[in-house]
Length: 120
Image (cartoon, rainbow, N blue to C red):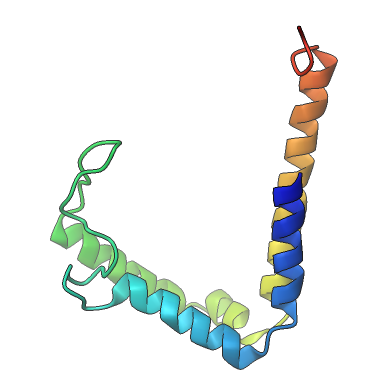
């Protein structure tokens, strides 16, 4: 519960950040993903290594087509509207957080009704 309140407080604080600071943070995060660092085109993502789940299977042609798809998606009218309108992102994030809270509350209520939460 404290984690949800913490995330909500951070979200509310982010609403009052200056637009320039948000643009700088966004640029920094994009640079981490698409930077031409020592690991190649994907920066912090090492597409040739393995992790706990198993090998990462992303061949260069798939990565290139994914990059083209993302570039196309960025130029669509809906994406342009989201990028230029200040209130859309906070509204979508608020609805998203409230939906997560509703689902979590529903799961807890179902668990409580079934006696699974506090069963000894």
